[in-house]
Each structure stands twice: as structure tokens, then as C-alpha cells.
Amino acid sequence: QVQLVESGGGLVHPGGSLRLSCAASGKIFSINVMGWYRHTPGRERELVAVIRNGGNIKYADSVKGRFTISRDNAKNLVSLQMNSLKPEDTAVYYCNAAVRVRFDSDYLDYWGQGTQVTVSS
Image (cartoon, rainbow, N blue to C red; front, side):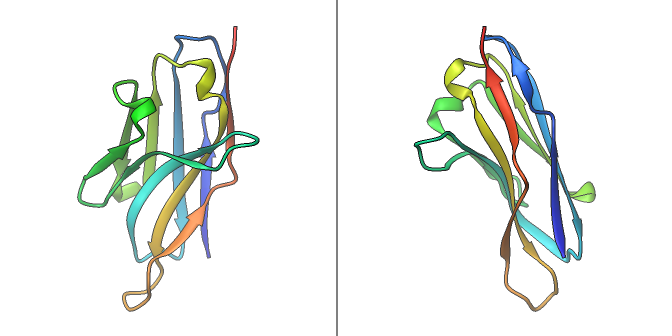
């Protein structure tokens, strides 16, 4: 019903930048929260940054001042600009969206397939 498609991952040197994008499509009535999480083997999936429909934003402490999340509500698009990347930012990054498919339905979580970000010299 709802698909999240990510793009923009890759390999970058420490100090470099990458931009991730995620487009939501399908049967969508409204989207509340959109955001990014990341997962590294041996660790739990962690929140990176989320943005609410009204614009309220939350960042993980580890990315504050380096990452910027933005959203285009008209296009159901969320982006993550990642600057000053560090090796510890290496992970699979997942897009997440809380979507309501009907005016009278609950918001459900949907996830993208994940995109690899590798920061290495």
C-alpha cells in the first residue's frame, strides 16, 4: 500500500558529505512523522533525526550540528543532509514514516529498504 524508496547512500571519506532522500508513495491520506534511523551490526537501530508534519525536529545528540533533516510535504519527501561525516556514522540508514491511509485510520509505521552509508579513508 505504502512504499518508501531511499536514495543517496554510498562511500565517503571522513569529513565528507552525503545527502539521503526518501520518497513515500502509494495509498497515503496523511503523514505525521518522517525520519531516519540507522543500524550497525551488533547494535540496536537508533534514531538519527525525525521531523513532524508541523516542523518539529529531533536529532540524536551524536549528529547535532552536522546533520540537517528537511521535508517537502507536498511531495511526501524527507531528506537528510549529512556533513562532517565520521567513521562512526557508518551504518545502514532507514527511512521511516507514520502514515494514515484513510481519514479514519490510525497512523502506521512504514520503513524503507535501507541504504548503506560508509565513511572510510
